[in-house]
Length: 446
Image 1 (tube, rainbow, N blue to C red):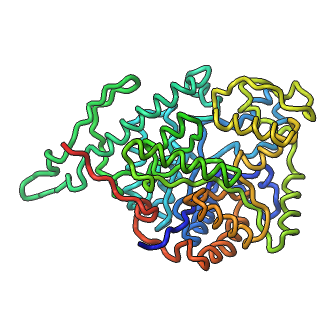
Image 2: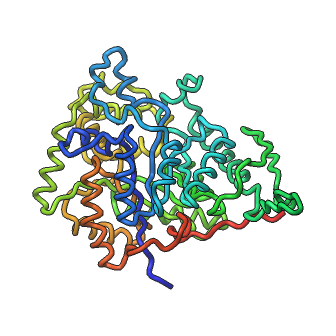
């Protein structure tokens, strides 16, 4: 058996994962210009990344809505505009060759038929490189863009998401791979014996089917899932091929991976059928002192108006601006947006005795993910240690801005990982599923 190989995803949250990264002299906006998206994605492809992952939200950042009429207070909020991800994936499908293309599709503000059709279409356009990041939505402002006053309850969102997933997969499995024979002599366009009508009737959805897109080149697109709450882990164990997660210590990451793999086995799955990939922010330079100086410079460009909304969306509706920002974090009502992230936030504040302002700056820098500041060798050491210790199957790399940090990662870190024998030197297959080392699902029995 070949040695286990580290998997890599590039997390793309334009104009960068650091809230002030866009202000760097060598940063480019990367929010509406396709050529800038393509440049970064092709850089990741040169680095043999498994996939690029596009986060999405159908609302502007909380900084804008929290500012109310004082929009000047939110003027520094980046990530305000972005290209709709399915449109972007369609363009990237025909301008890239190997890298997987993964985008967020919320189960709270879509219908299963829409999601099934869109991602199956991208899989055909890309020849088998599509992936769906299944989320229930964290940004509560999305609700008001879809005729609701607030999100559905957290537990109900996950209940709905589980049924949503089942409908999507049922639609994807409606056609056998060889159903469309297109026999001109007989006049038979498809073989009816290789079609399944879904006829799903459930608590949240009633969907007849079949899907009007042929079976995916991968069997079905990859499914990624990013929830770390109890319902989120359960959903990931049952449904996901890839789990994105925020883990800030080796021990926590080991426990999370072991937990999800054990849950997957309870659903009759092999634990190796799900890849656990923690997020990892990185600030690199050729020396430790230069990396630390770059990190401190990024921190110096952050303002309270920009960083406070990053934690207020997890405050359970409590306006933290009414408290002294240099005082301790008060007790928070439970958030309906993201239970696991709120728990992580509170534990960080209590463990390190952080003030509200310090907590906001820390969280805005990382979005709850681990942060590495140092040299390429040091980053490779850290990634290898987590990989070999069973804390991760790979990492979702979060660049503070674009394109320089991504270029430096590919130029400096990728060769170091290859030298250690834990990272590919060429793509193994044609599809995203093949490159991740996952088997193609067989059609269900009739």
